[in-house]
Image (cartoon, rainbow, N blue to C red; front, side, top):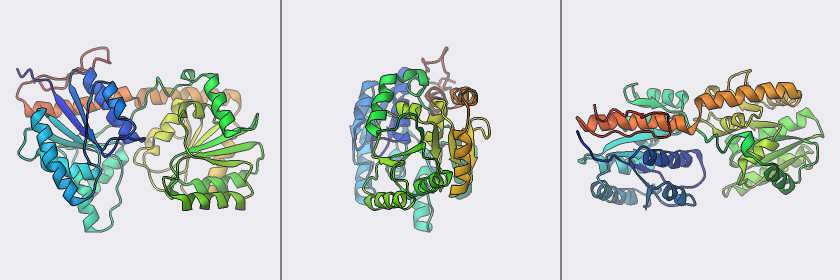
Length: 402
């Protein structure tokens, strides 16, 4: 029996905000809990300390770069890490680093796998080829059935390669009882929310396909002065689009009701202030964390009826799914959601929270991903040591010892 401690190296462009980054950090913690060694390679970022805090090793490298010369230089550097640290599995979480990782694993003992976080646009053969790095893993994680269908259709991957692992969130963080009144009061004062006003909230970076303009038009159609709307998100340098949204707000006479705030450092508290949460994406999301987080907090959620939202919202039970780019449909759903009485809101909240707890926790995501690592370890070693998920009630057999 092989007694080597499994070493798993995740490679991601940067460690900033975002679902892919959160998943990477959560898995580093899960690997360490399970008795493995977690290495994360990235170009750095404000969340490096979170990897180190759970006992993982962070190695800085310009794996974010799409420059072919730098990508080739990364291959040699990654090969060196694989050899020095006796890496068993290299897990790439983005297309550019996936190319470097794919080539670095050639001729080495490390197994190569990827996670596909989105249905990447394909505009011509060159883009199709560039995107194909994410489909070259011995296992390819799709974060939703929607993404899995994209991989099957465009890259002819079969079920022997694809593994569907939904993203998961922390219920210790996203739960109503975790939010103190003081935190809610703080945000309410920062946003200057009128007392007693209902709040419609759309979180998400300021980019056109997130559908902010659809929500603004829908707000004008409901024609209620007691409803306030906050759009949360940085423009990330898209100052022109922000100006366009502000002009749209003025054109609809909503200056006193719709506000754009750059960011929020306490999203659980923000959700608790919301009467209704909206995800108005005009293009399908690979998964979409907003509907999951909103439901975990017991908030009514309205999302567009495509992509990952179809898998995370129970239609008519935990939220509304409406046609994309349809302000009238959104205004009708908003009117219905805003008219819920206290009992109806309590029933919806109970259903929503139970739904997320059953299907979309970080523990479930970690369990499923560790099992995939186990499949690859079992292929690498005829006999070997597995990992145990010590966060569960019993050992998780990753089959590496079979």
